Length: 174
Image 1 (cartoon, one colour):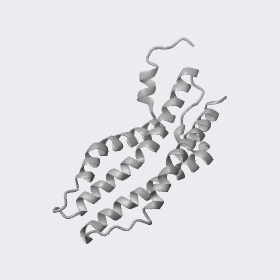
Image 2 (cartoon, rainbow, N blue to C red):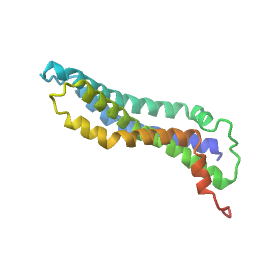
Image 3 (spheres, one colour):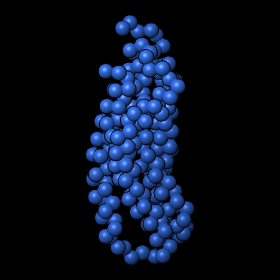
Image 4 (cartoon, one colour):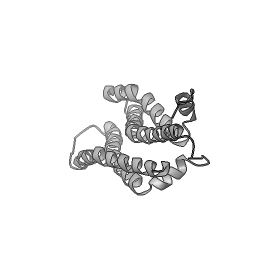
């Protein structure tokens, strides 16, 4: 099988992962439409932002799954733009795995990135009389790791040459 064929199969497998993770989150998001909480007007904006992220995350995951399922060839063209795919078997396989890891990192950490942005906005918008410990805690735990992971994912998908060079420093005997 060619590199392109393996890459497209990998995209389809990751699409199944997106559907599996996104479906339960979709049910959680639907429940947010039916819960009504009385709260001070100062907190309504923060609550709205949090609910928006809870609603967007499964849409992102299921949408990503649908895109990966239908458009693996377009993602292949984006990932291998201006690259020759007929390198040695070891280099070809390693590059394929690096790019698949990039897609996985983007899918896995993009919801955390959205929630970090939501927590930051909630923390900044809420009046300072409220202690937004949950938002601060999530923000400090996840903001930098999610930004780094999504950025690394895009790097791996688009290029990943640093890791390819590190992986094949010594010529391996095939």
